[in-house]
Image (tube, rainbow, N blue to C red; front, side, top):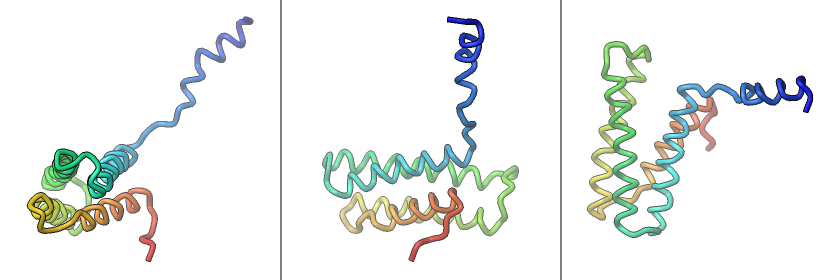
Length: 124
């Protein structure tokens, strides 16, 4: 192996794109949304349902705490909207666990947020 090839292979990992905060947020929503969709089919039973709802609520709790902070630079209206969605998610998740509602609204909210994180318009 010549020195040029060796040097080139040593730095080949540097070509990996840098992940942004938006990418991390998107991935977190994608994981939660996939789990909600799987649990909605009944796969994994009640335990999978409870775990998917808990993980989704935890994600929304983190977002609510973030937008509540003084250092958050999002516009106030957007911060209020995110906080409201967090409260809705908490309340609706309880209803799903009690068998009084389904997860369609939670999946739709997450999917809409994911589209926003990717800069896509909502498809009608």
